[in-house]
Structures are given as structure tokens and as C-alpha cells.
Image 1 (cartoon, rainbow, N blue to C red):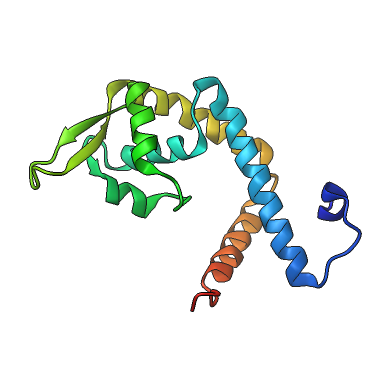
Image 2: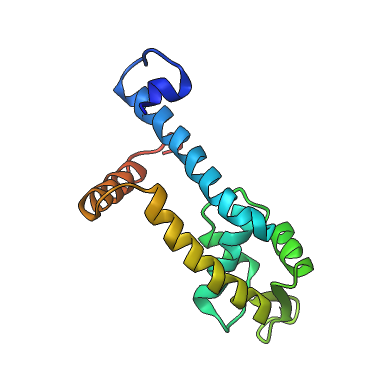
Length: 155
């Protein structure tokens, strides 16, 4: 289905406007796809993002700033997300050995088990809802990176 049909809009101001709306709509669509996968585990997409960041350095812990720098959504309240993951027994707080005032976060055994199960479901699901071949995926990644590397409004 086209973006025009999806949002019931006949035309756009220009191709840039259509692309911007299409990217925002697609982001929402992808976020919803992930939310459906994560829902049975009572996880939000940002919580999953925190777990994936910690998985990359497991078994080492990470401080909050390390996690913030790597978040997909930079506006996420990482401290609040970590507290929710602690309540679910997926992560624990660990005292920093370098800075006694600092607290680090590490995956628990429950967190690693959950991620192993979720990773497989995500891989299977992505193959089903992203209907592009390898060449198209590579080209789209290049184009998206080129778009993000353009001048921003704040520059």
C-alpha cells in the first residue's frame, strides 16, 4: 500500500515532504511491529534497547551514560527504564569499582535467558515483516545513513 492510501492523503507539498511523512509513518509502523513481539514479555521497545546494549558487553556492567549514548531513542529516561528492568529481575545495579559514587547496571541470568528467546523471535519476525532482498536492504541502509549525515536544522 502507498503512503497516500495508508494515511488517506491525496498529495504532498513536494517529494521531500512525502519522504519525511513516509519515514515517520514507517518508523511508527516498525515500532508497532516490535511492540507486538515484546508485548507478551511485558517489555517496551526502549526497555528492550537497554537490554540489547547490556547484552553487547555482557558479563560486564555499564554505567547509565554508556547506555544513554547507545540508545536508539535519545529522549528515553534510562534511569526509569533501568528501574523497571530491575523490578522485572532482568538487570541489577552494581557498585562501580572505579567511582564509588557511581552505579553500574548488568544483565541478570533471567535477562540473558529472556534475550536469547527474544533474539530468535525478532530474527524470525524481521524476515517476515521486512520484505526486501539483501541488495534493497543494503541500499536502504546507505540512503538512511546519507539522510542522517545531512545538515541538520541546528547546524
